[in-house]
Picture 1 (cartoon, rainbow, N blue to C red):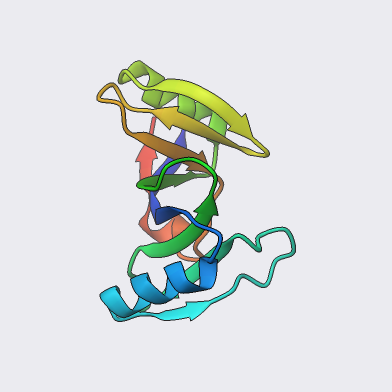
Picture 2: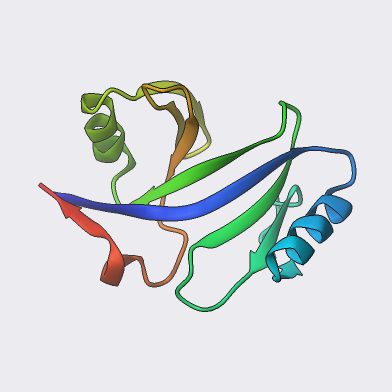
Length: 126
């Protein structure tokens, strides 16, 4: 048994100017910007929204710009296997998470819990 839910909407921006990209998306969505406090995450900017709303990030990337979803889970291996049974495929492992591809071609990530209310709001899978 494990849990999972939609964790984050990530706006991947192929850019050398992360601040400008984050500024655009913050203004477009009416959100504030906050740089992550965790070392090693300098290529991310949090778009701050109301409590309880899905997290949004702007990320500087080398690949073409796109939007992807992060599914957060308390058991990455079990969630990856559940998604594979639905037709997804593994693309690559990055640190502790998996980049996956849906049967229709969209990329998404399976990550550890990111938000503090994960336990209270995740779906339980058997």
